[in-house]
Length: 38
Image (cartoon, rainbow, N blue to C red; front, side, top):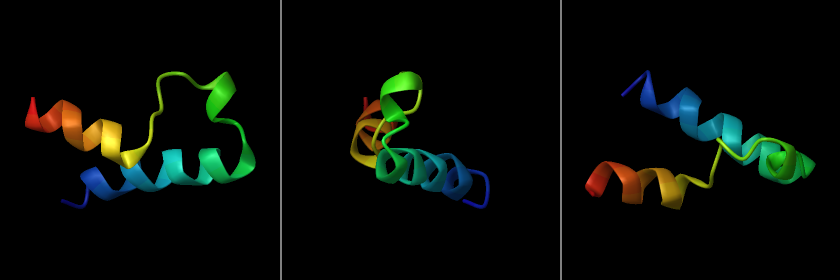
């Protein structure tokens, strides 16, 4: 889980900064979770 949290917190920080638009690879935690579930 230690490897999963960083990959989730980074996108959250980007979303707050509004950098998510320039980083399409990083999506919201919900999208990441949906990917893992699928």
